[in-house]
Length: 423
Image (cartoon, rainbow, N blue to C red; front, side, top):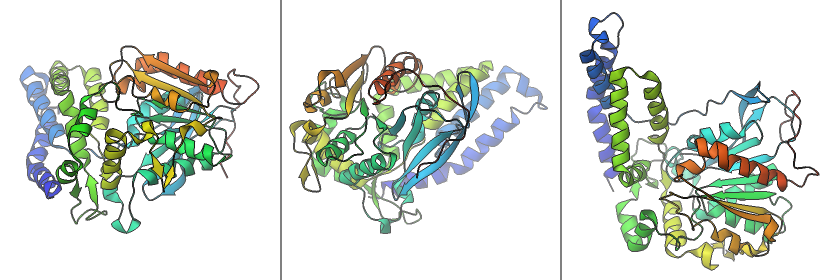
């Protein structure tokens, strides 16, 4: 239970060396230092930067989406907090334009990375959508007095956010199974806030299909192993002191170990770019890894319940998923169109794990549900990058418009005017 302390002590012990590396990098990049312009100087500066980045703790980045373009015209974007809960903030990217675009709730993954991992996803959607996102709060920053946060609390949060945004909202859930349960519960309650559509992207709805390293670990290891190995108490110097968490650095190490050769190769390329003076390529590497290496802790109860109920018992798939004692019935979904998106090369939620949602929502007619397999992309590629922008996003956009309940599925006209804030 002292792994968290050891991790922090190690970071602290390396601080003097990291500061020395920063000073070395600054010296060998100083335009007034002659060695800066030699290959030797670039090698020293590159090595110093690589060491500094390897030993740094990456904080949560900002979204930094100040503008977007609509019909090639720049439009101001303001980030506002619509609703705050102990473990999540509902953020709105309010555009300085009045438009009848689909209102979209993006449910960010709660798997160790911050919601800013979806910065590119949000940025690409802003020209044609009114975007909101779940900004999950790092568990280490939530005092123990604020209580627990488990899988059922997660479902409750999603339901509350949907109700806040109203019945016109479209759900876009990435790498998560439980949003399906939230929509099903709203349907069972005949809640007027049932979303127009939900798009499930790379979510482990039924992990019995297309097993991966992640699903195999969940099945093979007993729950006691998870409790004793990956759950740790936060040290006293964090706001969430003594809370039991699944540390983000353990999740990050797991992700990296799954693709160790690739990550090592990327860092070798980074070093080579720095030595060659290829600043553009080096900047792309920094941007990606500044985000990828920024991680957050997840509450122990949420993590353990997800392992047990989703990966071991397959509760959603077999009809035994319960919310506060009430069985969740996806067949109750009759008003919310469903799109399931999978990536051909996804090694986390492999093809075949998300598609079962269509069968579970058996009351939906065929013209209200659709599956899409994106060829040539992995887990990250279904919601980020060129193929997301060129193939997946247009599909998602048209699906939302087709099920928006409006007279026309065509793109609405925009007028420059300040958006009205939600009541």
